[in-house]
Length: 390
Image (cartoon, rainbow, N blue to C red; front, side, top):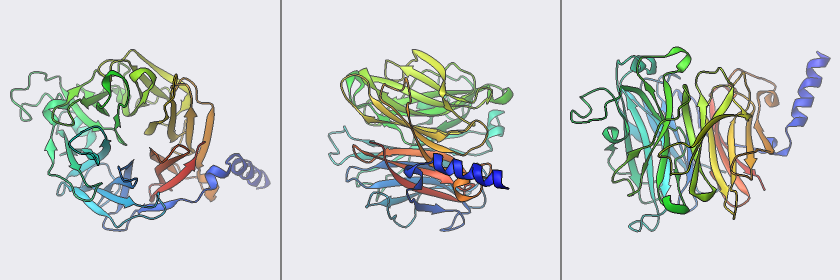
């Protein structure tokens, strides 16, 4: 007993003031019409307001079923949040993987145009991996900061390669991609270099028959250079099992994609580097500095200076359980991550369920603060914290 108390005190001491910053509760499972809320994504609009998206799972916690995409807005840097709005309701089927992005470069919309990409599906993930069902890719937009949204646009034939003629009988690139998922988490837009203005969504798919331990998964990206009029597919990551992903701009107009390893054989994040805007990959590798329990993570650019950029990365930094949510900071384009900011851990609440902290998404608030929207306490809450990183 005494040993357990000492271990708990040591763990709490290892979590400095960052971890003790109070959070605001954004979504509480069982409230506002949904049994569970999962898969957080957050962006800041042109007015500086925060938009927190999530999946609202109506009847349970499973990844398939009656699932809506919901939104809450904060006008005070995440201290308080609006009432829930339902943006996408695919009747009794699934609408999920919210992946928002603010287009800051379209001259037609000086106040910015928000894109929300999402997926719909008509069967469970494993069934679709076996060719029994289809996932589609859609987007909606808002030009007033997230209050009103457009009709949905289906871009499946441009960014998916299913061997299913029902999607587009004339589609000439059928490659038997099966399951498909955006992000999840925010998308990104290049601000410098030859690809400035390009909006890019990190995504993943499964190829061919269902593979052992998720080896049929591959991460990829899709992007637009004309503000959503048309889309192109980037090459897939070569490492088998590369899965949910997040991307950020690094120096020289390059791209870094940070990826979950679905196989779980190496409990580290996969990294992909591209010098041509995500079209192809120059290098892919496992990063031993970023332990991971087979979960989602989030990466953003937080400072741009001459030379290397500064990045922030968040994930459940544990090789066994979804717990120990941590933000890491890099000042050299993600080559090293010397700064670690603990965010939340089960032991801080006197309990440590298997999935205490899981999915998260990052947003840059200002030059000194990062916001993090994340799942906690066995998916009973999605909460937001404002973290001073500098």
